[in-house]
Length: 85
Image (cartoon, rainbow, N blue to C red):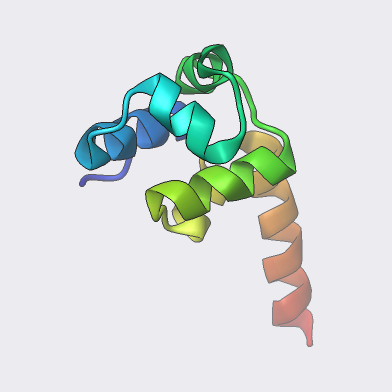
């Protein structure tokens, strides 16, 4: 898979690859299918759902984090702090 443009695109492509419907994925991660649809269309998942999606779809966490602005900023701060040490 080429680098996705958004986290929603990443989730959608991985869900398709796994053969899950939005309802099946939602049931697997404990979310409504409408929540999955909103995420695929650009909504930012809460951290616990974000991690559940990472696990359920075997997503690369670094790629996923860098696709969501608030999470990307946290990641960048962590990486900057690690470089200073």
